[in-house]
Image 1: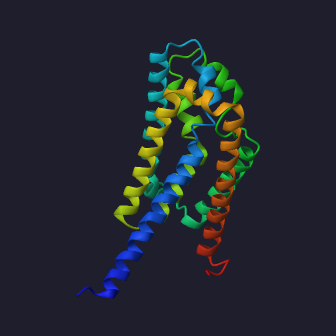
Image 2: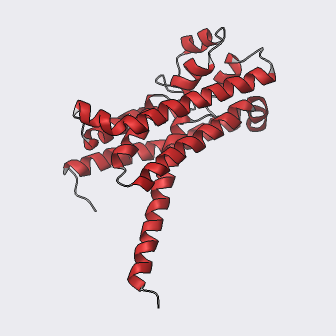
Image 3: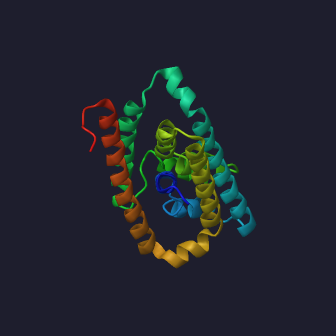
Length: 225
């Protein structure tokens, strides 16, 4: 006969895993946001052959994957070396994400992710897939901050696995979206891209506020519900 307490505990653990995994995937994907990077990617790769454009997309996605994975691995050590507490990082990260989200609500890229001069310079570079497409346009300060906060919150191996899984899935989606940038841009259109960016911005603002609230609760400034 099944122990109801054991079944209940398993259910709770499963729901906690799903919630954390969805949090990790949504926060990282919304900040990397390959759809918002489409116009810049098309401008940077203008005149390139389809095969070279795909290679540039792969290089940008791989760069973002390596950068975010590196900060996920080194996150705990960075906290220890600089004496940074998780609440402090949650609050500062919430502010950064809020600023990026507000820019996304206006359907524009945040200056922390994209600078016009960098995009213009990238159009004549052979390694544009690394800089500025891979970093900071995909793996920018916001995405790195989100990964660091998630690492600080992770307490088990499966939570770390969920973070690495979210980074991997995001990088693969970036590769697919940017690799077929022409078709995706035609299918969505300028209006569709702006609507999608605004929706992601709204969710990101909510996530930023939650990070801020979590930090205040961890400091004891706000009582936990």
